[in-house]
Length: 257
Image (cartoon, rainbow, N blue to C red; front, top):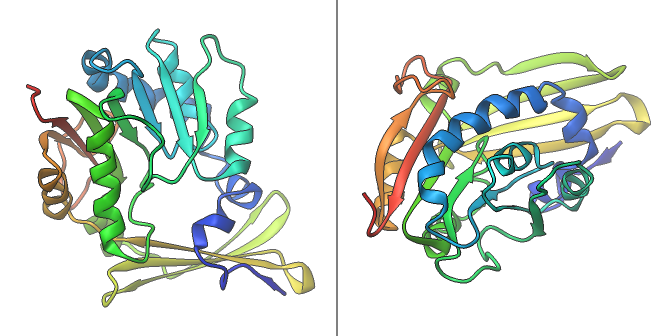
């Protein structure tokens, strides 16, 4: 059996064709709803920076394309060459820009963007928690004064309370086995995904650090990002630690209202 689990970092090998096959429900219709909600939050801030909106960890560009329809410049950044190839192949007018980069070292000047968004728990991937702090610092650096950041992660309280340890399903005719666990020592939710059976099976992992609301707000505050609102989903509902599926924070960089 070919294993990808021992290759570090895990996210370098996972976000490719197998990832896309496993999550077919993450489609353009979902992105339309999510991006429209986020633009309602970030639209008033986008013009504060020449670059408009930065979609950080943009994946296949689903959200970036929707955001660009509003006439503001949009730049998507991701580490996965596979996902970026899909993003660049999208038809869009105006078309977002796409750049391959590590979110800990963004290739943009200070104050380049009026707004930044980070969708779908694309945060907490690194072995060292100080790298998460570094990411937040980079977001603050590239934001223009008074710019805004929307952070979207899963609601850790709800996920931990409802964690399903084992799951099997068929995806595109292929058997998929998923094992989930929570490591309290590292504060990570770990997922092992085995796709296929026999000699051709491939195994991947996801390891995501858990952040509760107060912890995430504290990280923002340490980077001079002041949290202005907290939502529990893309419908704008208030955050409820027991019930909300998402934890969505709107924060403003220094000098903003």
